[in-house]
Length: 492
Ligand SMILES: Nc1ncnc2c1ncn2[C@@H]1O[C@H](COP(=O)(O)OP(=O)(O)OP(=O)(O)O)[C@@H](O)[C@H]1O
Ligand SMILES: [Mg+2]
Image (tube, rainbow, N blue to C red; front, top):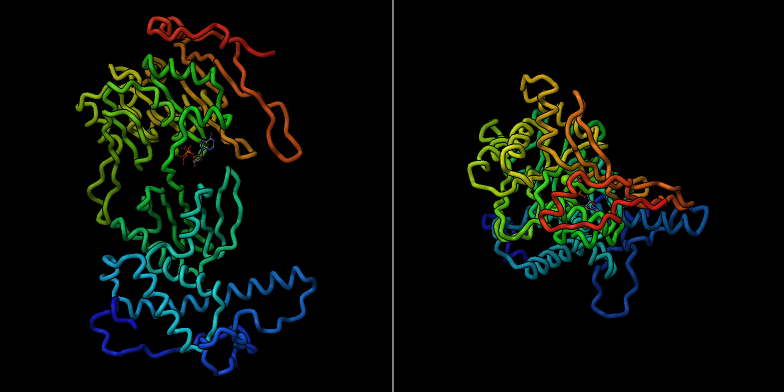
């Protein structure tokens, strides 16, 4: 039975079978009859899930919930035991070349054999669930696997083995999926990080990685993570939202899209600012669609997420140091090198450190039309962030000089925001117009006005122009983007 993928050195035909600890005394004495009856009409054996008489629950709903919980616990126990046996028996090296179908068959056969040796009978659904979960344990990321496959889930957040949250449509909810215990969670974490040549342990308790499908993964393990390992997975969406999608979802209006098209096409330097998960990368990606196909674009990211549609794109990804602390290639290294690669435009996924200096210089020295994102809550805050990054990069420059560098480098700040109801909107588009004394002057062109909240919590609001005409309208006109004056007129 274990033939095809069995470890070559396993001389014993079968491992010593240990009975699974049954969850209750009632289930501890299963009728010792064969689990899989030959005939079609079978009386469910006593050990069948949920057959145990429960302590009298208060309501039928509570009884059902109780039964379901017990069923899950029992399945989890069975899974752990069967998984252990699978690991003992499967030749993991041979699995790489096995087809999915043959592996599934093999797992189902091993599971079925082991179950009947343990005198445990499962109904068809439970058996299918168990086989799927075993397959996920062996080949994938265990309990996380269904969530990774679920297209509606955008983020997966694990707070210790018993609490897994997901984000769907901007809303966080607790799932009923759990890991068996911290060891189980750590095993899955180890599987992910070892696949990218990293390690996490007490002395090196956190790690960033990219999953095979491009999703971003971060983990932190105990003792730094106090209540069990913390994992966050930001799923990679193959289909990135385009400008038309974003307009349809109400992220910004068609007028704002026309303005942004003019801004990108006439090579303004643009910063997309926003909080975590506010849609910065999505916005940057959508804006990049306005870049002309003849241009050579170089992208630099910590985790390659951008999907530019142009023909001439060179993608770079920075690299963290290896286990010995060597071999790091920072975003700054990539950016410096990119400047020697004759780019028309440079796009940095997120500016968060010393690379800010080179980014500002690039924007100031002939690489107009460059774009990046920063983590900030408003355009003004974004400027302060840039100033702080320059200071932290160890550049000793008077503040006025830093500001005038920023003012001449950055033309536009687009502010993305995730509102309380989970919707993501471009809450402000602000132009930088120069310096007044020591202060950078700016003007807001479009903004999102909040008008109220529906009882359901949904935010009511509208986009509006501020009435200020673009500082760049003459440039737009000269480049052939003659926007009508009406798009700058506010609705009153
Ligand atoms: N306007 C939108 N409408 C609906 N979903 C959106 C919108 N903008 C972004 N999203 C979704 O929100 C999630 C987070 O978006 P994105 O990765 O662009 O945010 P971010 O600000 O770059 O996050 P991070 O801070 O992690 O870099 C993605 O799943 C994306 O598809
Ligand atoms: Mg991002």
